[in-house]
Image 1 (cartoon, helix red, strand yellow):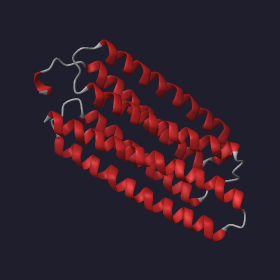
Image 2 (image 1 turned 45 degrees about the vertical axis):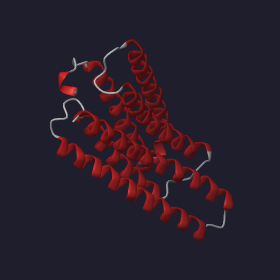
Image 3 (image 1 turned 90 degrees about the vertical axis):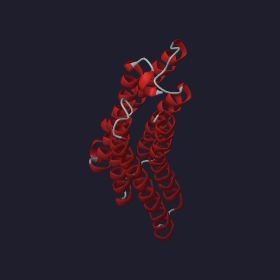
Image 4 (image 1 turned 135 degrees about the horizontal axis):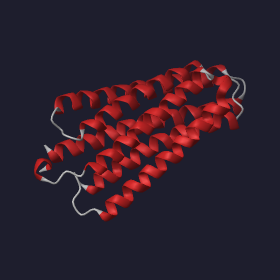
Length: 207
């Protein structure tokens, strides 16, 4: 079906832009954890990327509303775009809480999770770009497998981080603040897994 429909590259361009925002946001979050002295600057960068992603999502939804024939189901395009925006929203929420809650420095677990998130985001971006042709489905599936592996790793990290936090801290308020940041970070990784599921559904419908 995909091969006989008119090519509307505008949607692919917009999805690529969304995926690029996901990667750049994950890079900024990793920078936040590794260069925390520059936190005000980096949190501001993440905020700008969140605004840019919202604009891309709105442009995509407007295009969906005006386009009769789309490269694949319009519901899938909307879902995929929204899920990429969700990744960025979770990172934005986590990064803001680092400063609002006056966290003195990132924990080693946050550094680890920022690395996992960046790797998952890069795989998401590569997978989204594969949707333009769907000629190399095997390579695409390998990316989806990688995203799921990273989601499982992020989940394991989060459980270990929370357990360590509760078992080692004498400050319940600090524990509550860090747990929320841990959970937001893990949710961002989870959203990458949601994207993988949506992409797999698109592949199954169009190959």
